[in-house]
Image (cartoon, rainbow, N blue to C red):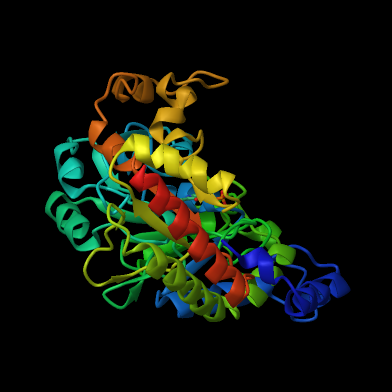
Amino acid sequence: MPGFEIFGAEERKQVNEVLETGILMRYGFDSLRNNHWKAREFENAFAKRMGSQYCQLVSSGTAALTVALAAANIGAGDEVIMPTFTFVASFESILALGAVPILVDIDDTLTLDPQAVEAAITPKTKCVMPVHMCGSMADLNALRAICDKHHLILLEDACQALGGTYEGKCLGSIGDLGCFSFDFVKTITCGEGGAVITNNKQYAQHADHYQDHGHDHIGNDRGAENHPFMGYNFRISELNAAVGLAQLDKLDGILKIQKENYSILREAIEGIEGVTFRRVPAGGEENYSFLNFFLPNEELTQKAHKALSEAGVDGCFYWYTNNWHYISGWGHLKNLKSLGDLPSEVIGQMQDLNNTDFSKSDAVMGRTISSLIKIGWTEKQVKERAKLMAKTIGQTLKE
Ligand SMILES: Cc1ncc(COP(=O)(O)O)c(C=O)c1O
């Protein structure tokens, strides 16, 4: 995902405004900051762009998930349903609060299978966390209906799907809370950063206080502020926020180029017999950060993945065997490896992940290849890539 591809004069200007004052912190120092409030400005602009009432910037996407869960009062022993295909931040953030990640199968949307979600609900379930992997989304209407029926919180992890939409609304703005990452390889970047969005005033207030040691941010004397409850430090710095502010202005341009490049690649391979695509739920529009496709079986997919790499088509991911994004590679989670003792609720309630049947997820992930989409490609480069992808995949399927 390409924010870093377009780092330029606009980002430098924003950062220099902060450097000129030397006030790198988002709170306080009112008389010294020459009226620069980059984090606040980014929050207002991002909330507006996402069509959400409130935005809280934080230090990372992982922090955003942790703060969002905490803001929704999730704590020890509460179960949070999450998919088998995601980034490790999902279970890290849940475990950080003493809550219990419950992993369930994905379907051909590459995220939560609503039936698997419903089957996993227990009296301890508090939250359902779809992760909109690789630019597209979960079946949000189905998940919303399940959450409403069982009085659960719907928390969207939209870290990889910024700018995608569902029934005309931005991903992340549909659930009770939505989370984003602005790390260095996301659609827009702050270097490191993240955001929580919500339309719930109480969650917004919780997030505001929680990410800054519980400060209530009333008045302009930080030392005199009250702490209605405990929090931590998940603050973003003004330097990171300044970069993000410049990047946000470029978001629509990024999405446009992504869609153009994605369309060229997709067109080139969609006629090949045996190639199908990840299902985008009706009413959804991807952000086009990846082209995700399926081949007929695991063996052919592994062969094609190897052949693409050997042919010089870079950036094609086979998540099924990498250590970062799929349950099969997470020995440390399966075996609950932690530095200190985990809360007793976690030890008592965790699934036995070494022996849970995720064959439905395996059947999808074993057949999935994702090609990244760069925005720096020239038209000629995309067309050459498209041709090479089509030739390589076509040959593999014919052999
Ligand atoms: C789906 C998803 N969620 C959460 C995160 C965590 O974001 P960060 O790296 O900013 O902590 C990532 C980062 O890759 C991600 O892809």
